[in-house]
Each structure stands twice: as structure tokens, then as C-alpha cells.
Figure (cartoon, rainbow, N blue to C red):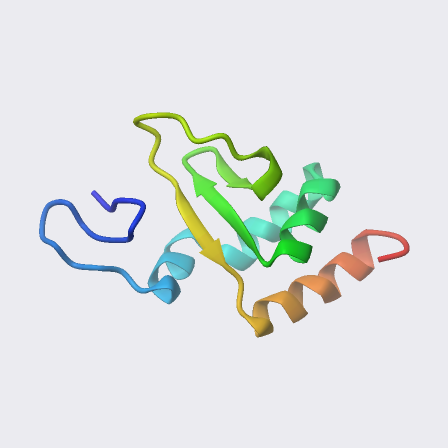
Length: 95
């Protein structure tokens, strides 16, 4: 039971951002996301982060915290941003 601060409520272990990204398959998740929310994908790319919930990725402007909802703030590194920019150029005209 990993909490928003990436610590396990059961054992106390704290995940690294890399472990979280591997768990949610951040690159393939965002590659799928661009297919149904190009505007949201662009916002994630520009801001360099997004929120991740059981519903999937959420751009910062669309995220509304709800009590009891577990969410994670996922920060993209330079390499991830470069890969995603390359993907967006092939999918989003004029980007």
C-alpha cells in the first residue's frame, strides 16, 4: 500500500521515482495517453510532471485532489521529456 509520498504504509519502504515509473510503465502509459488527450499530453510535456491515479495520468491543470484518493506526482527527467517530445512531433502537428 504505497502512499503519495512513495512510502509503503505496511513495511515502511520508500520507493524511488524510478521504481514508481517502472511500476506504472511511464513511457508506454504516456504514449497511450497522447492518443485520447493530445492537449493534456502537451501540458504534461510542457510542465514536466503529471499526477498518476488509478484512472491513469492527469495533467496538472486537470488534477483535483479528493480526500481518500491515492495519487502520485510523477516528475519527468530530461531523457523522458526528449523521448516524449519526439513522439509528440510525430503525433501532434506543429509541435
